[in-house]
Amino acid sequence: MAKDPGLGIKLKAEVVGLKGKCNAGHKVGDTFDLSCWDTGGVCGWLYHALFPTLNVMQFDGSYPWGTDETVFNCPDSYNLLTIKVWRVK
Image 1 (cartoon, rainbow, N blue to C red):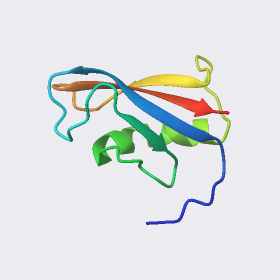
Image 2 (cartoon, helix red, strand yellow):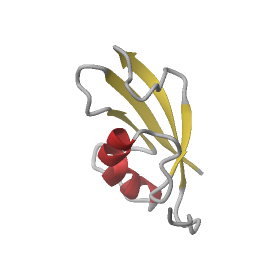
Image 3 (cartoon, helix red, strand yellow):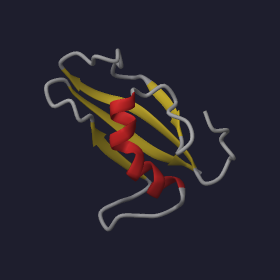
Image 4 (spheres, one colour):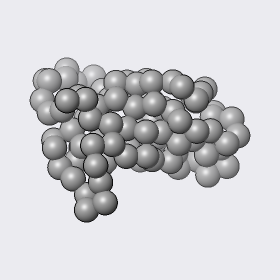
């Protein structure tokens, strides 16, 4: 795995909702430290879907509808997991 060079803004995430059972074992209340270099323990499917948003957030970009946090859903629509990601400044 690539070493995190410490660039950009630190990101944190928390599982805030789950309808069904997460196949990766994530539960409501789980927290993660995320970056473009470190999955922080998030399953590969969710990390892959989150990566473009992580890239924007970590390097201080923004979306027209965005703030310093966003809510994102897992791509598994049968076991819908909702995760909140925010910048730690």
